Length: 366
Image 1: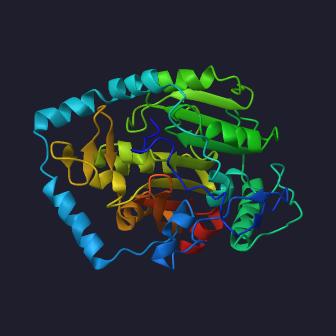
Image 2: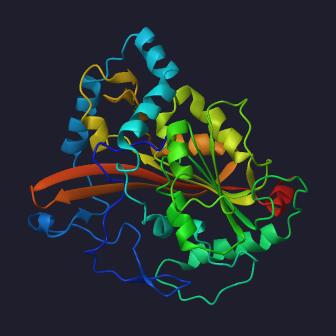
Image 3: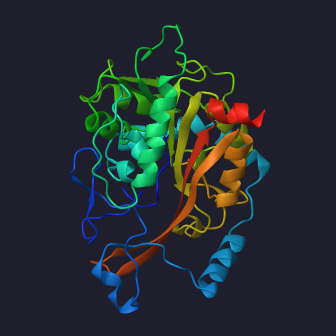
């Protein structure tokens, strides 16, 4: 159920034309710089690059966005809302049946924005020599602390897929694997195991039939993470990372709190939940016409799939109420440019990292 943007393949920006060079702290290879490194200082130069970071909106722009949302915000009748809710699985299966694996591009920006997906320590908890780029020091410290703390945790004796792994990642809403397969290709350490699930059985089948799918390193399964009665294939307290990329927004807002709280229980102490999703007044929200609104900031697309547009405070409350501590909560305001058509597109995404408290912190608090 990896939620789609209104533009094919657009979930992050291209960095091929950036002037900032950052080295991967393990391999030394050039990697994509984090957002926030290219600023538009002269509006006349807007078409010189594919994207500009941290673009400030004028008061007039924000007022126009609010007006647009209000104009098109009349909710559909309750019976129509119920229809879209009850048939959600059907709509996502239809989406993946039509598009298969042709809609999304692999998310190669993941490892720059979320280095937890390629940790800076070996999976046997031994440190690698560091070759840090600017801004990596804090993240490397967190990685090292996490590796040290997790190494001291008791391990469950229960047999489950990936039970012998040293580092476990779960992606919720995996779609056709555009996050999972880059993770597996980036790190071939046998200590890594990746779980991935999706609401759509069609999407999961596409993952399993992908030539790169390796059941020795990955376990794909159908799962509705808003269904609190549905079991996960791993015990609570066994995951290092839970990833939600443009997927929480596809849930009904009334189900978000309980769903995040359930996921938080799967994390080890020190484990992190990573999210990237749509922000309030993103271009995709402003494109919705009348007759597509389900409730405040919650819409249905033409294909029946749904999407919500968040604020930072809303997401913070969701994670805080699930017992997680903030590591990062930021707005990525991006001006994307189609240089061929001379078009500008204002995107708003929110990126979060929240961490389950370590045992030592819990003891200090008692």
